[in-house]
Image (cartoon, rainbow, N blue to C red; front, side, top):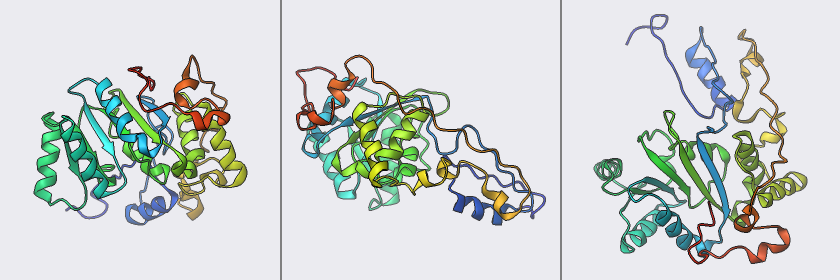
Length: 288
């Protein structure tokens, strides 16, 4: 390897918390340059983000509805919380006639490579994965990402949905939300608004409640940092490293209004939360 001063070292990340910026500075000095393309930690507008309220006991039915609505050969990456959950869900899908494989930390390397190649080639167009597949997995033409289980912080969410909409392509990210995910409601709503996506009315209200009662901030108390989420500014200035830091742009208005009949499939309002849509609506694609 060329010695320091003769080599160029580059680090790339969709999220760049200030702690990691400081660590990168230690390794990349003396000529450390921080270059931000767009808003650090935000998601791409090439990814259509949809959040739907799905109770735990309805998730499998809604997932199969989504898979049936997709193109038959479209590559779909499904994220779950646990290794056992990945195995169980892939087995269920296989029994129902869907081509599905898994990837998680308990698989041997040869098994991971075999499953990834089967997914990449389209032989099994559904990959059920834990968070191990959220980073470092570059598979072209992944059309859909489904957060069957949402993560506990929005850093992980950004990396997960970033598996689609890559290299200028367009992708769809659908997330199943319920009472278990209230802790990330505020951060998730902010991400959706920043990416010019449609914010469901019920999620906007939950985000407001989270901020009002201090239940949000599952991804690191971002709302206490003046809006600079995910290290969205160059924190080197605190250490006297000489660069100028332009403040991150203010978040867009969170008063996005749902259009059409979206209230029907996003959960209407708080008074109707006990009457949320059933998993199947007589063939109606209620997530569209």
